Image (cartoon, rainbow, N blue to C red; front, side, top):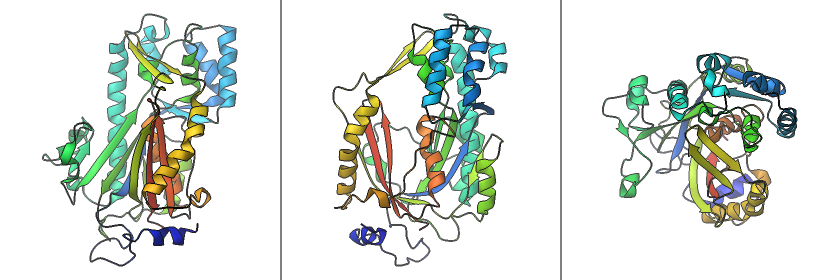
Length: 366
């Protein structure tokens, strides 16, 4: 199915211009207006990970070392950003000793890091948005209002028990920030915890931010930041916040969720006095593969698409440069996709449960 045919199927999304508003955004539908991201300053090259990890944790187990090296080779990850550093291990040497680290120590490190990264990602997002921070009406994060200098009457939103309040604020501009670190799960290698090696080989840290709203305003909610500067930010060697400036980026058309029964142990985490112990089932990739097409069919069917046409949609997998950065990965992937010449795409995420989350999105830049 061609993109033009997909567009015609959704009769509510007209190309007719409304006074003062974007000609492509669907009135009343949530639109992604801006993106921003930030990283810790520790860049890890995958080829040096094994030697560094075992050196800094004073572990010389050759079998574990060989297993981690094999895991690193089988992933597509090449680089990642992480909060953990040699300086932190010098300040907290007990982190590298089995049984000595505590949750409090790890929270002291991670709380500061995730807040700072979220502030930097949000600042980048607001700068690319083209409107002042005082125009943000809602904030989905706990500690950022002061750090970003937001309006004192900004509405802070917690994502539970929303009820009928979920749709009663037309004209709102919502800043959504995500920030992730794996500090809470950091431990020295141990033969008793082979799943820790998966985390060491795969996961990265960072932050993402997006501004969401309806009826984007032409000439106001945009950035004239040149694309060559965006490319320099994407492919340069520095860490820190990066800015992506465009017109309104995506229309979020339809969202659904589904969970698979009897899979609650496939992605499993347990909080202990030393931090989080987690386990990923070996059958996780097969479970997702067996159910993802049916889920995509439901998502597209709910939107009125009768033909799948996946090859005519934008898509990407983004482990290579950032590892699995959890919730932030959506921002990182979308950043690469805005210049794809496809109008429609699926945004998919998978988590404990096993839960499938999906959004059908429309690229407003095509």
